[in-house]
Length: 489
Image 1 (tube, rainbow, N blue to C red):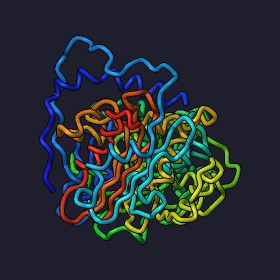
Image 2: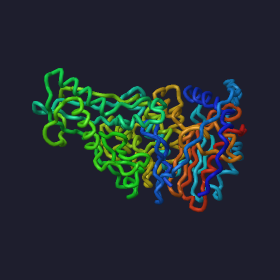
Image 3: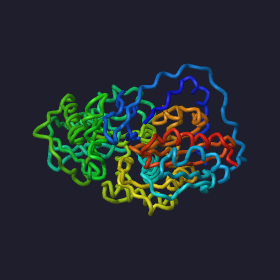
Image 4: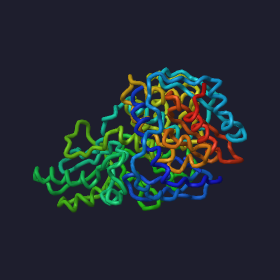
């Protein structure tokens, strides 16, 4: 695929104010590029760039943005009387970008009014397409709906079944870290806040044990909250090449054991996390007897210590911004648990669909979800369902879903859209389009929100899953930018 030339970073100062405008408006109303960007908490590594049919694309580290005086607004103030685009106007605006020469023989488009939720334009909008990482929009909306934006995931240590035994219990914190990984963080306070560490938990445990007069323990590990660590529908190289790790209710650093590379992943994430816990527990003065082993925590066991993740809204924003495959799979499992379904890939997919149905999303019988990240090429989602989910997240009656909109990358600025929208045809979308990317080999999708030049608020999705002759991403960016620059009347 041909890479687009990188835009000079100085031009971005002109449109940065739009980020603030669009964020406020939204609240009121994946080559696999599904990961592969620097994690805001786990070190300064890029994703692997292994030459396989579906592996992350490495990207250069962005240069610093020059300091410039604040720019004036680039969007006119919203008057509340914005003109909603017409179907004919949208068809004319999009025509140059969405033809089969640009997007391949199998492509879909949906454009929806965020104010009313009405579909304004569709090109096979209900068709089933491989979504890649736009799947994360559905996962994020569902987990926020069932748990709420302030929910925190707890990793605990409880008393075991016999005296002198303690159990480390994984609660599915996707961002639980080691102290070493947190020290490597390039910006630990951006997006996800500061993640808690397994060493924090060990120190708290040691303090509680000493207070009760205990200095020797046997340690057991309970990671039974989730099942099925690897999807049978994933390509065989995903885990070995570090595209994603085995899904676990207990891990540290998303099962990454090497930096800046994300491979190999820990073969047994829970035991790797437990070893880091034991090391700090010993440093804190507690003697550990016997061998580390798995054992389910007793029912209603007495809690000795705990650490809690950042709020769920922050985690969702992180997952969407950097397209975090590992985090998305953990969040999907939490939807399954909350919905009292098996904490497996299939259980999570069914749970996500059930939650979206309660949010009013229609057409779900025609979609297939085999994971929460979008890595599975067996997934099928329609552009219609993606835009309905985005419209639900922007509705004032669903304030808990706001992070779905605020977490979307900003065109030309952040996350997986940092180096997109570089050509002249897509320049009008810079700083105005907010959208989630999705990229697998021969698959590209983009779904998000945009403000037209007349102030209309739109949700859109563009999907292409048979583009084998050329890279459809520049044309997809052009389509989104056409929405930003047109009145489409």
